Image 1 (cartoon, one colour):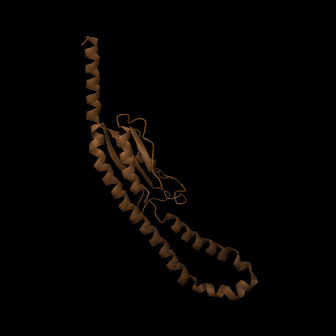
Image 2 (cartoon, one colour):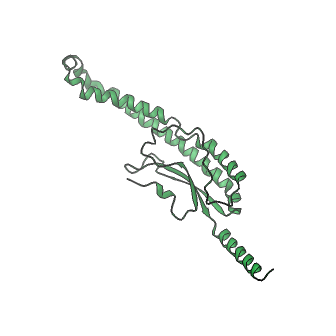
Image 3 (cartoon, helix red, strand yellow):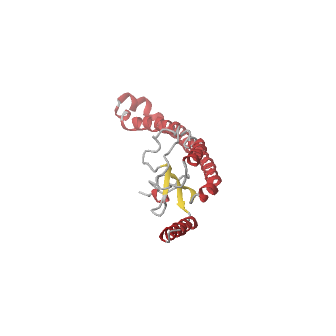
Length: 201
C-alpha cells in the first residue's frame, strides 16, 4: 500500500492531521468540528495564537469531502442491484424467460450511471482542491507569527487528486517545522545565560 503518512517526516517537530490516511475514509463522517490539541512539542506557541489559528483553519476543514457520503450511497445504489441481477436472478425461471433478454439494453442505463459517479467524484475532488488552497493560504498568513516563535507552518497533502496509484490513500496535515535560526538563537541565549550565572553576573 502506498504510504501517505510520509508527508509528516521524522524530522518534523510536530504536526496535526487534517485528514489522516484511512482505508475507510469514504465511510467517515464529514468533519463538523475541527479542534485538534496543540502538539506538546511547540511549547513557544501560546494558547491564544493556537486557538486563533485553529478557529480560522477549522472553517475550511469542515468543508472537506462535502458530498462524499452522497457519492457512496450512489455507488452502492448502483453496485448492489447489479450484483443481485447477475448472481441471483438468473437462477429464477421467470426471470430467465421474461427479463433476461431485456438485459441486452442494460449498458444504455448502466454506462450513464457510471459516468455520473465519476463526475460526482471529480466534483468532490475539485471542491476539495479549492478548500486545500484556502487552508494553505491561512497557514501562510500565520507563518510570520509562528516564525517569530520558532516554527514554520507547512500545509501538506498527498494523493488528494483524481489520479493516484492503486490503493493510495489521501492525506492532509499541518506540519510545524523548527526554524533553524530561531533554534540557534535560543542556544546562544541559553549559553550566554549560563556564562553569566557562572560569573555571578
